[in-house]
Image (cartoon, helix red, strand yellow):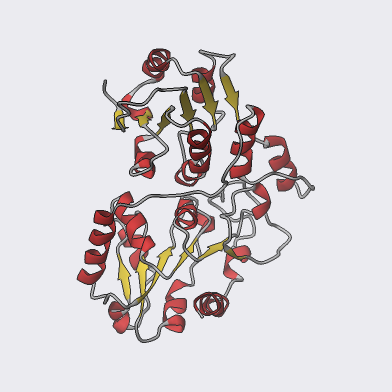
Length: 342
């Protein structure tokens, strides 16, 4: 069968139940489903979980003992996915996306399907400056299980790395001139939505530099990250740009080697949280009230009346000055880092 990214064999086990879980995107949202799958397995040992997502996010589940099979959207058009879902014939379908495609899959077995509540009306209220309460994303997912009388044992997200992956990450860092005892700060400055990005990293790198400290830039776009390097030519000694040069798994492994992580409101923040790293996250056009803030993170934000202006971040600032992000100074971030690492 094509499109099966990972199959963990379960010979010798009695499959008590067969589950299908759907979350097609994005990186952060897929990571936030990990405690959902873990709770299924803790309640139903020996069960089999098929996870439907986009191919780009399949690496999230490598080494994960709680997901048995990942099925990539790109390998199957919707008609093929429908046929595959019929073949899998799950006892339960959990739709954690609630998109047109995911709803079509759940509609195959309407009595077996449960869907996450999206809180779209509440988000619109918040965007209009009105009051509304939205549970965090992990809790919204777990509420779907609770409605099925499945006991919730954990709400912690998790990414799993092999010893080989961690060793390879150490060798990558050594190749960049970073010694084993170096203090590493992983910086994920890029976001899908431009208004979520912060422009003061060159100033921050110079302000926060000290002997034995190294900054690792990660993300998809090497050239964009190069624009964030300090003007000081000595930056090559302490700021290393690995953007666009790491697989997703190596991105996770390099992040795992860091003493702390700085991220925009993006999937990288959720990866850091799932790895248990001390984390600083920027919130500008978006707000924590939407329910996507990583657990335990230090939040960098300023209270301005135009926040929030967009559910995801947006492309253009109506004011033209990006005040929600530009009001956060390099000194503010430096103080937050020093407090976190002391």
